[in-house]
Image (cartoon, rainbow, N blue to C red; front, side, top):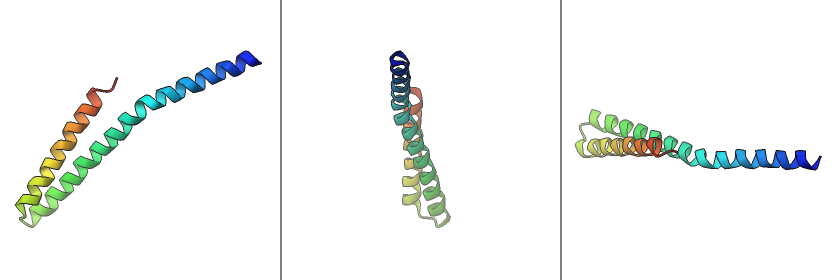
Length: 77
């Protein structure tokens, strides 16, 4: 019975270790997708009103989100 409990503990520990590895990547991907979405919404709403500086800032925010997503996806081990 003791060996079974130790085996279960090892499996649980490895699952928690695996979760600890992919959780920051998942949060980074969610954050970067939200950055892109917010930037696109900002750019499109201000472009309809011919407000060009906030439109440009929205586009820049979207580009930064895309770059952050690129880094998050390709640096994940």
